Image (cartoon, rainbow, N blue to C red; front, side, top):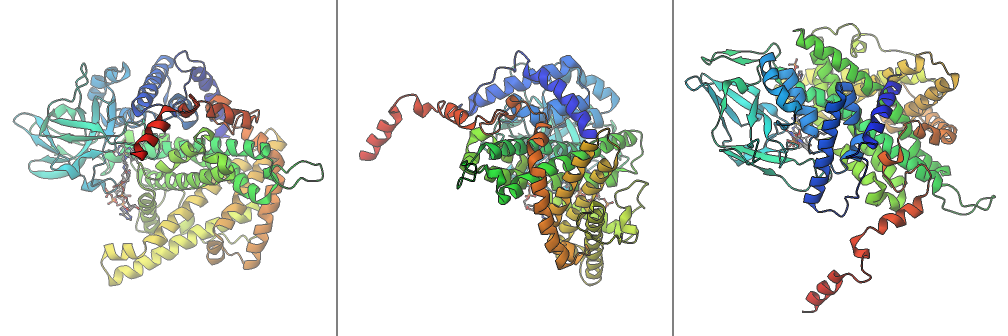
Length: 629
Ligand SMILES: CCCCC/C=C\C/C=C\C/C=C\C/C=C\C/C=C/C(=O)SCCNC(=O)CCNC(=O)[C@H](O)C(C)(C)COP(=O)(O)OP(=O)(O)OC[C@H]1O[C@@H](n2cnc3c(N)ncnc32)[C@H](O)[C@@H]1OP(=O)(O)O
Ligand SMILES: Cc1cc2nc3c(=O)[nH]c(=O)nc-3n(C[C@H](O)[C@H](O)[C@H](O)COP(=O)(O)OP(=O)(O)OC[C@H]3O[C@@H](n4cnc5c(N)ncnc54)[C@H](O)[C@@H]3O)c2cc1C
């Protein structure tokens, strides 16, 4: 199983990180000022970069040490070098030509160049074609003039831009020969390499506090006619020649490649956050006892309440199911990227469609799940020291950045309705959309049969997609395209999510069908899959009746079936979360440590409050005095 490989690499690298001389000693950051937090997180992020360099890690290994499992330990308040590592470097690798790569990469790897990915502007994030920063080519000086026309076009959000980066890949509207050529990437020096002061014509700073990840160091950036050499446009795809003549890219969206990569990385990584939250909630749910004592004289463990099982256990199953499909997406992305580099872009449209819907489905499911897990820990889940609020803040950011989820689902829907209407190139062998051109799978629904559930999930996806495709087609006869599209938005989003769910369950069905050396493991995977499927049906009962071929009686049976499965899974809850192999220091939660010593840890963390240093803090008297005046 793919996830096992991932875990093995993580173990090895995880212990390197935990024992690293500059990383092993941690400090609590809750009571630090904004600047102290930044200093702490930046110095640890720098140590991580050095480690990556010393170890000569490849992209797969980097993805493990940059993953939330590890980065929550190295940079608990957000990694100011994350966008450098996850977007800036990959953009150079994939969008700079060979000469440019050799010109810049040495300085990137020796830490002289630290970059960010500056795309979003104050007034435009989603609609990339609407970005208003301009790069106008002047053949006489062989430079681009980079300019921000007004404050609404200021770059706003890029991670690490605030006070860390000295370079940015800037996405700007290219003009050559007075013609707009669309959005292109430019390598721009924004701060002096020695003094770190902003270069002439550059206005740059940090945007301020956020819901979470406050040391991601998000920034703003404005250009006042900044001259950039011609050689600084990233030219692997499109080119501007010295005389200003323009060569188009091999694919019209080639410059969007970094976004596709990061969506895949986010989908994979948000499951890491869910695994941590699930481990915390599972451990707390057996430690916590509350309620009328039972026959043994003890108050019940809260996990033995049926409602608590519903709050916790389906999300443990989701960790396993979502890990398989996101790992598969990562592998598929690697394959398609190498094809695209070789000039074959045939697989790109479907990769884009799949990355969009999985990033959206996973971040939506994981943030809802983490919030449910936080609530399952009652009052103590509200404490910062439980780690659950930060995990939620991380997962929910993933629903917005790298493409707001609704917008991404609409990209997937666009691909699906074209496939359903036959107006797109036919899918390649192994495509995830071939089911749309085949008759529906009529395997009758039967509670207890995973194959029957998968078929029903497929009928929902097929039904949702074909129905909205037909509605759209009909509306197109009577109204302009934009109105017809808008008329169907809600159904399009639902269709894309249903397609994503079908993708996820098919991938896991394949994992379950693989021969395992251990019968016990195979049975456990089947149980996890059954829980995931029964829960998926219970969350969308209307869809399963409308499109999936289930009857109201099937729905009732499924509800009972789910609760029985949860009771069956309950004794395995701790081994299933222990199997995520997360050391206590990586979990970093008062509620989620392996030994279950919750209450002592809670008292210990309270002792760090600066308000407890003196019996009566000086601030009390100062504030009271003011209020009396
Ligand atoms: C090195 C290893 C690292 C591992 C890391 C491990 C863990 C890290 C995990 C997490 C990261 C942590 C920290 C990072 C934190 C934050 C980073 C955040 C960064 C950002 O947010 S950057 C900004 C992101 N912005 C967006 O995503 C904007 C969203 N909008 C768009 O993408 C586009 O505007 C749009 C919505 C896709 C529309 O584009 P548009 O040009 O208008 O096109 P359309 O007209 O809609 O479509 C035309 C056509 O093009 C196709 N299309 C669109 N996009 C693509 C694409 N990317 N690839 C291929 N094809 C594309 C579309 O399908 C249409 O095709 P048709 O055939 O139908 O014509
Ligand atoms: C923590 C964080 C880090 C970030 N890091 C970076 C970074 O490093 N670099 C960078 O360039 N950017 C970054 N961003 C910006 C991010 O990519 C954008 O915020 C994101 O793409 C959403 O765009 P928006 O803010 O314009 O949202 P909007 O598009 O304004 O969304 C608002 C609402 O409008 C709806 N909407 C918009 N368009 C449509 C449509 N066509 N159809 C239907 N509904 C629509 C959305 O669904 C949403 O409900 C970051 C953002 C965050 C929160």
